Every structure is written in C-alpha cells, then in structure tokens.
Image (cartoon, rainbow, N blue to C red):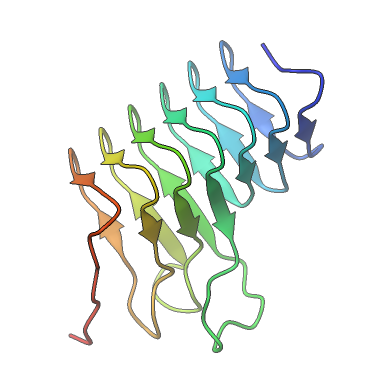
Length: 144
C-alpha cells in the first residue's frame, strides 16, 4: 500500500508487498525490496533497501555525504535484508572513495537518533550482520 501523500520519483523500483506511509519522499535511484515498510515522514534517495526492512518515521537515508571533498560523484547506500531503522536515523551516502557505497548488513538494528556518517576521506564503511547501534555510540574512523 502506498499512501496518497507519498512522493515517489519515476525512477524508483518498488517490489511487491511494500508499504509506504504518509508524507514519505522516495527520490531518485531508489530500490525497495519485497515486504519492506517505509513508515511516515521518511526521505530516501540513492539507496537500495533489502527485503522485509522497516524504516521508521523521520529517517533520512541516502543524502549527500557531509564531506567537503565530495564533488557530486555517483554514490549510494545499500541496506541488507531484515534490517530495522528506527526513528530519526540518518544514513549518508559514501564519499568519493572505495566502491562509493555505504553498506548496512542484514538483520541490523539502528536505534532512535543514530547518525551513520558518510565514509570519510578514502575510507569506506560497512556494518556487518546482526549489529545493534543506539544514539550515543560514536564511530571513529581511522586511516588504515
């Protein structure tokens, strides 16, 4: 079911049995996997969402990285199957390095208010399977 107030870009690919709530904006270059639930007031662009994911209200996913070295490269976010993203979570696209992708694995739980940074400088970031993050966790990325 797609709420009448949702705005969906013509390039978006939405699988069967997906629920999209009120005031959701699905921007350019988005794929949503079967059985996923995008609850009200989310903004999503340049993102591939796996099967059976839940994206809670006021989450922002796939916006440009907060990195001054980013020059508009085609970057993206990939979220694995069965992942739960709670209210007010922010996930930025990758910077201009690596494979240009911010990845969240399968069966992860990103709790209320978690801010997942873009990838910094020439690093890229991957959250593995079955991870749980909450608001007060700070991720510090160091050069290898």
